[in-house]
Image (cartoon, rainbow, N blue to C red; front, top):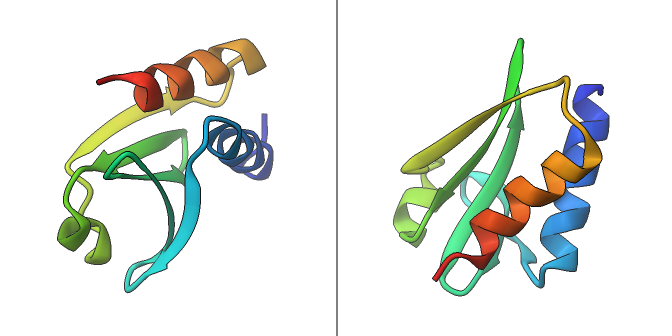
Length: 88
């Protein structure tokens, strides 16, 4: 998949899971249940970043990162996002 496809699919899944898109000093990200999430497309992989500290998200310094390959199925994307947003 391309970088644009990945970003679109992950962000659509964020939205479907109930996350809200917000604008912070560091740019746009998603929030749900007091946590902040962002998808970043890099070469040769893409990442889902997250933190439970708004001040970290404001500065673009997310605490946790899950690197993902571009050769991934839609189901694998859904599983990754669902697992991340569904954890207690």
